Length: 390
Ligand code: NZQ
Ligand code: ZN
Image (cartoon, rainbow, N blue to C red; front, side, top):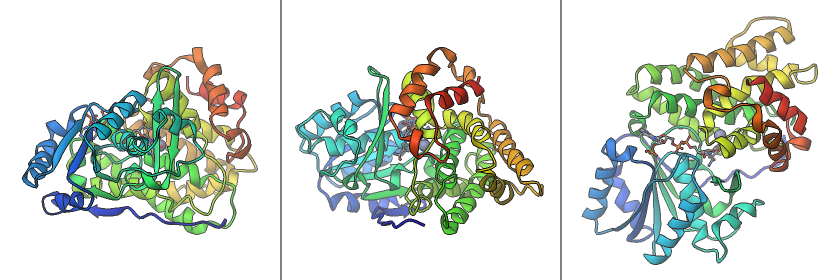
C-alpha cells in the first residue's frame, strides 16, 4: 500500500428533514448573499426549490439564482456564475442537484478568485491550489460523489473537450444528503448514477498496487450494496433505504476511501469523457457500455487473479477455474447493466464508428492511460474497445 493523506473535511448531514432546522444556520456561517445554483428544473417539480426559497427568505438571505446547469456542465455556464458572484458579492454558493450542478458550482467558486478565464483553471489541470468561495450542497442524485470530493468535470463543446480539475478549496463545506430528495430521479438516471458509482469503485479496484485488502474489501462491499439496491430503487423509486444506500455509496465510492494508497490512473473514465465530449451522452451510461468490454479486453494471465476475486466476492461465482470465473464475472457485470435497462451499445446512444480514431487519440492525450493504467492502453487499444461497443 502507498503512503497517503486522507483528509475529507466535508460536513455530511445525512437523512430526512434536516433542511428546515439546519440549512439557514449553515449558510449563516458564511454570509447572507447566496448564489443558488441548480439544473434544468427538477427541483421546481419536486418542491425542493420552494422549500429552499421559503427557508432562505425567512432568514433574510439575499438569493441570486443561476439555473439551467446542463448535464455535462458547460464552461459558458461557469462564466455566467462567476459574473453573478462578482456582481452580487456572493458569500456562499448553494448547489442543489446532481454532479453537474455541484461541479459547475465548484469551478464558479474558484473562478471568482482568478483573473483568468475559468477555462484556464480547467486547463491548468495539475490541481487548483487557489481560494474558492464556500460551497454548500443539497444532493438530489446518487452518482458522482462530487458532494464529498474536490473534483469537477466541465465541458467545452466548442473544442470537444471534457476535462476534470480539482483542488482542496473546491471541496464542499457541508453536504445535505437526504435520500428522499432522490425519489423523483427517473429510472434512466437512477441506473446511470448507479453505473457511475460502480465504475468509480471498479476503476480503483482494478489496480496494480499490492497489499490493499482494506480498500478492496470495502470496495467489494460497496459494489454489492449498489448491485443490490439499484434494482429495488428502479422498481420502487420511493424506497427510502435503497435510495439511502445508493446515496451513501455514491459519496464513499469517490471520496478517497477506496482509492487512497493506490497509484495509477483510471481507464474507463478517460474513454468515456471523450464520448461525452463529442456526443454529450449521459456519463454513467457511457461507462456501463464501456466497462464490460474494457474488462474483457484487459483480461489476461497477468490480470486474471483480480478478475477472479471480483467474480467470487462481488458476484458469488463459485467456478474454480480462475479464467472461467473471471469471464463469468465480466458477463455478470454486462447482464446486470442490461437488466437495469441501460442501452448497452454505442449506436443505441447515437454513436457510430466515425469519430473513434479521433476520440481514442484524445483519450490518450488527455490522460496517462498509455503508461499508468491498470493495463496500459494505447490509441489502438482504445479504438479496439470502442469497436467492441458497436
Ligand atoms: O437538471 P435537472 O432538471 O435537475 O435534472 C437532472 C439531469 O437532467 C436530473 N435530476 C437530478 N436530480 C433529480 C433529477 N431528476 C429528477 N429528480 C431528481 N431528484 O438528472 C439529470 C442528470 O443530472 P446530472 O447532475 O448531470 O447527473 P450526475 O450526478 O450523474 O452528474 C454527471 C456529471 O458529473 C461528472 C460527469 O462527467 C457529468 O458531467 N462527474 C463528476 C465527478 C466528480 N465531480 O467527482 C466524477 C464523475 O466520474 C463524473 O465525471
Ligand atoms: Zn464517474
